[in-house]
Image (cartoon, rainbow, N blue to C red):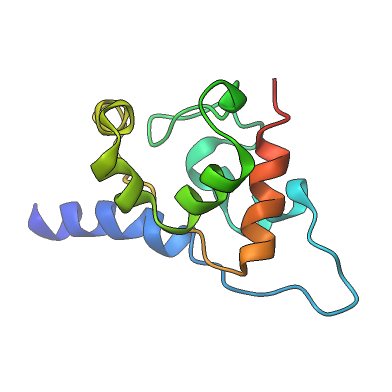
Length: 117
């Protein structure tokens, strides 16, 4: 049982741990980053959410680009200081892992996520 729990906890971290940076000729692209950073594993291919993580809709009601990019880098820091995020996390099986990559990639991903209806 403990081994199964450990695997369940480690899977989202490993799945979301794609630290491959774009080459200098590539500019980060929100939808491509969403796939390459393995966000689809927990949030679904159409950002619809799963039992592991919430849907990524209407984020602009609670976030701006700077704060969302910061959250993507250090989700646990944000969860500790936000009662809304702490409560939200109770409803999903997987903790949000840090999004690896550059600050530019996180800003690009955040900007794109904020456009989702």
